[in-house]
Length: 139
Image (cartoon, rainbow, N blue to C red; front, side, top):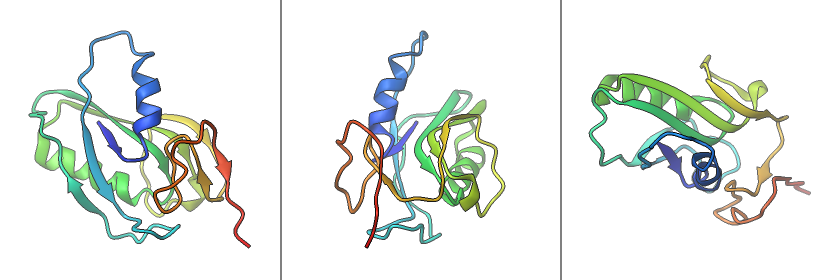
């Protein structure tokens, strides 16, 4: 389950490396708006259309910083979707920004508390298409 829009690039590369049949779907969850820091107000903008009861689900994120969005999605899946197992995967993690204690099953890289763009990560919906991850320096 990819969380839109940031996970699209990472998820498309990730599934190429999984050697078992998978079903791909997306949810749109927001806690940012056009700001560079999480508002903490998590909203599900687009839910999955799949019946996930009894299924093994992997939530794929581009980046986890405060953990509030992922905590909300995990709770939603456990309480409302009846999944058999639920695992989490993120390309990037900012542990020092965590506001909630969550376990992430698979982490690509821990990164410092810097604003990053590229490879699906955006600044005001731009730069997702960069083929690398870059730190934005605000002046």
